[in-house]
Image (cartoon, rainbow, N blue to C red; front, top):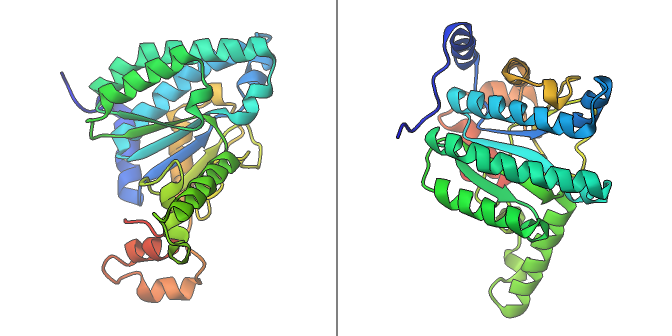
Length: 280
């Protein structure tokens, strides 16, 4: 079985090569996939049609990220707030999620993609939980792109859960309160061991992060596109990466500090370590 994404061809291969030569490709991209319902309404279609078309956008973004060498792609697929939507729509979304997992996992596995999930997974329908667990197990040894599905997720839920676990471990003596710092808190988050996103992309033109990765986005660059998610394709991903490559990531410092130190070996790795407490 082939392991690795199918290589880009033609004009797409040229664009990818230029992106790779022009600057740094983000190690971790997070996407708030917004606008499915509005896209459908604009076309006189039921809301679920927007969610169905959005699966095509996911497929294209995952493949392009794998080809470019992005290591992590986190997709905000279903928030804890989404449970408040009409029950009929939630049920349709769960069925669509189940179908997408069943239909796409073999393709992802062939392309060497590893699936992970973050969020309150126990709140999902049992059939979805079972399929997700099976797909995670099937792809766990893959070494290419890690696709992280944020399901029944919110940033406040993530931080609250981490705090409860920290309090439990302090009470049990497994953790000393004087040892609690940013690095240790990070290990208790659902993304423990995963580098923070370098780039956040939000579709539909909305300028907010909607309770997504509140801790992890502290130093992420943000790219807003007016495109609704069902209309989002790899060309829009490339535009987000181009925007990212134009940014100067200062991590709280000033430009002069960067210009005098950026030639130091592993300088940016050490900056990221000192700011986020992560290994580069």
